[in-house]
Image (cartoon, rainbow, N blue to C red):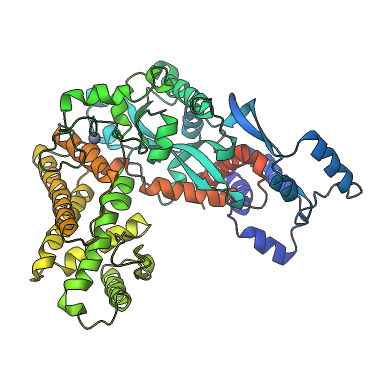
Length: 555
Ligand SMILES: [Zn+2]
């Protein structure tokens, strides 16, 4: 019976955006959309996942569309229109009023719907979803080492919801858990439109602080066997926070960020003459004994996380997707591609940069086919795609997708493997070092042994050093190549120096690859026609639960 309920409640009502158009075509748009989900929820009594949605009072910014005077005028205009809200007839409607700047923002305290991890885990266990508890700490370690701890990570990021408005989605997942779809292994905590976030006069995000307090209380309760109530003595253990720097800055109220000269959370680079942030030769900024103090000085004393037992600021590290594949490696691959078409004899016959680059794109696509990858990962290459308007002045950059950059680097490493062109030797070794670094991470599981950690560190360092050397030489030659951005320091400091200072943790587990996916897929569900902007905080949570129910009930 549950299966039938899920099939009906689940798949029909959780599909993404394009249903709007499809519905229009079939003439289904007369349906009251909000009613669909209510009916689906009512029918879903027998479904396995019965998670309570908690309401937590948080401050949010409410956008009042119009001032009273304007509202009265508008009401008068709208008279006689019945219940219709005049959708799509905005000649003198809402947009007109907004343009006049009469929308006002008010901070109000509201009960906000949240699926707290503690409640969720209990419900999920009761629903018989056992896969998410599987973790190698639980399956391989002996009893004294394991103590029934389930490591969890919390992630937050913004995606685009309806009408291209930003939507912040806070979510969590169990470290290392695998599933077919990212929607089945990552669980939502709260959803809020970015426009609703309230800030104090000093710039602190009050909404996030309140959400974090609720999350911390929930995680604290679920971290002890006596209060967890999951099953047996199982507990959830917070072990890392993920997200891009913008989210981290607001979520953790970080004092240092990219807009400051001193931007690094781990070191004091940029503050003294001897600690340059790009010193990849002596790593003068790396002072292991100061790391802990620096990290903790970067967040306020009253940060809710500080009340979570065993929390450490070191758990809030940067991730490889943002600092490497969309950071340093993105800067490298743009230059590598231009150096290849400039110096490699195989491209000497090309009449222009763009023809040579499209030749490269074809080679990359063949490379993808050869290794069973989708040919559309790199669809086209041109100077414009590499952000170059003027070959004299613009530094080339890689593509905007992390995975596409990874594939390009991999291709470049293969292509340059046997090069004899003097100008391409350094790029060849650079790409080899970068891809070997990546290969070692992919090949290894959670923890490295001593030798592997050392090898990974040396490979990463070699890559950064070669990039810096190339940058220095090209600067002397007045050629705009090898852009260097602070993200390169984050890679050096937060990934490589961390390994050098004794960490054996594989940084791939903190990468945001699948998290970005999750945000994308959730936002796509949020664009469904029957979700209204004002209730999206609740509706999206319900829908994501329906997706899980549909999965748990099986085919
Ligand atoms: Zn640093």
